[in-house]
Image 1 (tube, rainbow, N blue to C red):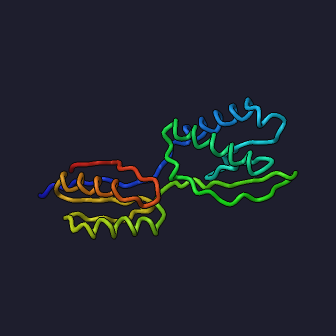
Image 2: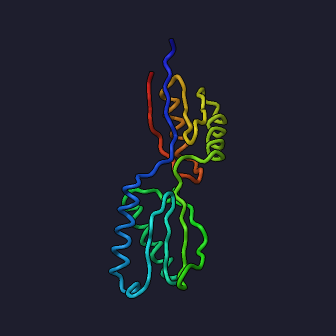
Image 3: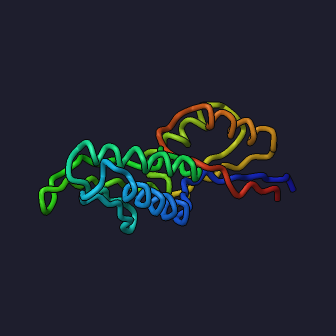
Length: 165
């Protein structure tokens, strides 16, 4: 029987790293002079972050601090989709930031189409929010990974579960 090799393309974030970045952000916000006496906070709800600040400048500064902390902790910024700043209770501004977990269906279709357009002898299939790529030759699979890394799909992607059967 022919040998089958496979790997999965996933989009996952370490929730603990996000929580740590949020804690570091709030610590820095509480210590900074430009935030003294103001109401500013970052909260984590289910699959989104909520940034609250008194005005756009403070919201933007807090967002910059958060992004620095996320990058330092190895969390890719591509996994965050920023909403518009909207007015909230007490004259504050609120901005919701969606956290992408899993590959959305339309992006998964785009990835599969890209893999098929390479004309490599592999099969790509969508399995929920994961794309599985199978083929006989390991070198071909590694070449596919290299091509996927070179193309920007606008989402965070990792290559996991590399198997040889």
